[in-house]
Image (tube, rainbow, N blue to C red; front, side, top):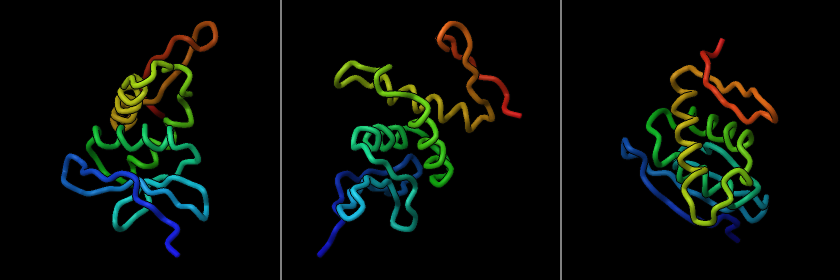
Length: 121
């Protein structure tokens, strides 16, 4: 019996096809190409946001998978509570592009409300 179901598929900016797949045996959502698994998530919401952010960013897919996983863990969903909004996806895409440029986030202020991007050491 097949335990994987393809939920979505799309193309990156350079033409590589990638997929959002649900694995019923492991109860995880995976993003991958025909050759590599790029990232896996427990939540369908996180997986869909990561999938859409990866559609918007250009670069090495394996590196993008690692960075999108890191950013999904760092940025909680409740900060972007508007249903159907693209705020989180836009923020994820911008954050991934900044990390690809060699920057890292630094939070300051009361409750970490202020964020700036500084060169990664």
